Amino acid sequence: MLPATFKLCAGISYRHMRNMTGLRKNAMVAIHHELNRLAGPGSSNWINQVRRRSSFLSARIEEEQGYSEQEMSYVKQEGHQHSSANKTAGPLKLCLQYLFNTPPQANGDKVLSKMLPDIGKVFKLEVMLEQHPDDLYNELVGNMEQMGEWNPNVKKVKILQKIGKETMVTHEVSAETPGNVVGPRDFVSVRCAKRRGSTCFLAGMSTKHPTMPEQRGVVRAENGPTCIVMKPCAEDPNKTKFTWLLNIDLKGWIPKTIINKVLSQTQVDFANHLRQRMANNVSMEMAHAC
Image (cartoon, rainbow, N blue to C red; front, side, top):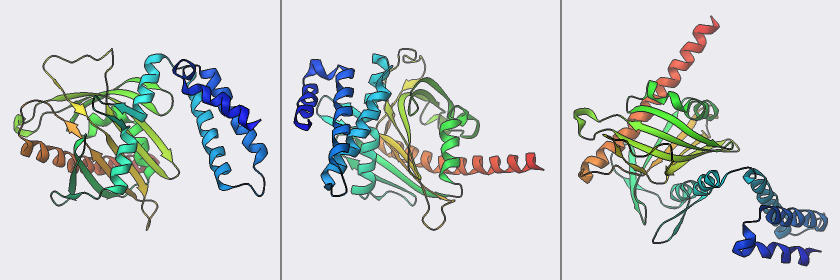
């Protein structure tokens, strides 16, 4: 049974068959059932690994059903982005590779940076916040459109489209910097919000959306692979190790020294404004409880 099933699954390697969702689903479900039969008390590690993988793929195929072609393009962009030069991983994978495999070099007291091939300069902010990751996740994802209320560097954030539970397309407008050194910018981004155990991931990069073409009087900037990772502190799980990787092309004729200063300061300011926002939320909850 298993060899025949792998022949069925091999069919999806052909382009015209790979687009047949029903065939993909049936193949993965059949493999999963067959591996369940083979795997017993003495089953090898590779069988257990393939079982987990086939189960994951079956779940992803289930999620894909019912999506339009446009919606699927955003879901796929979350995982992979094709450039004219090569194929690079999606924003979350790239950011995680950077986090764990390439220690950055200091660029100031609090913000680190590193040049990455095919991406450019990535800025890294790492701070400790007093709140639990779930509370921060609820604020940054659940109350995303309210960000302009507490972060003066942001004019507004609007969700243009939601695709499933983890993916959305947003439009953000930034405020001008002091002295209007850098004028207002806007971004259209595809974002994914994921939880893996006690760790929360928020990743995104620029995209296009039919309801939000470029706006007159505002420069359309581009988000490269960008990611926020929120992980409970090892010493105190009610606190959060907050890591933000930022890669942006602001467009326009701006000296690199100014761009580097603006982006690194934006990260530091964001952390401070977020701390204040969370402290205000606690104060309001206490006031309502009285």
